Length: 171
Image (tube, rainbow, N blue to C red; front, side):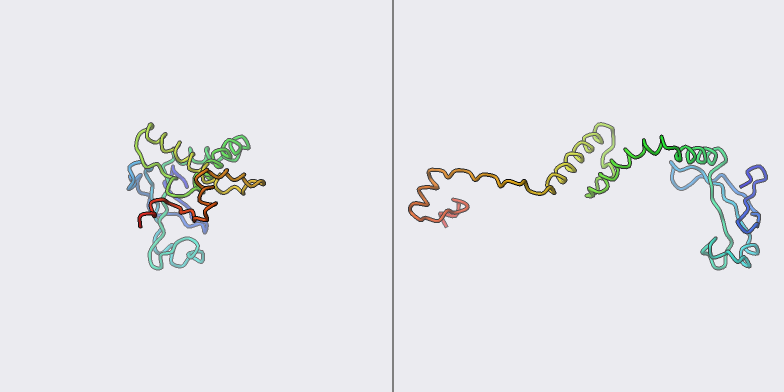
């Protein structure tokens, strides 16, 4: 990309014939785009066409951010190669992986406002912990059974079956 000449060169050496923008994008939060266009006569005979564009009959267009944003992108990408950045990001990656692995639509916040979002984050963390705990293998020792109550002993002595619910007695 040559911002001063307002041209883009493709890997085969062709130079773009048009430079338009910066256009606002469809999203109000997205950065504006510059669009460079190659002509149909440049793209049709090209041997690398299949790797460059999926259009069978049209020309190739390339969209990219303005110079200031492009320079910032390159700077940030260079920072991301440093070991310090990777160590900091590993923590975030672990948290995101946990929340993403939990599923149930909890990756995106459903509420507006910091207070409501915080409540959702806390409840999501509780749910993740409960789900993790429920997947643990059972303890080595079986829990000791509870002692029978006097009423249960009375039923057992008279060989009366124990019902799961006494609501069934009247039916």
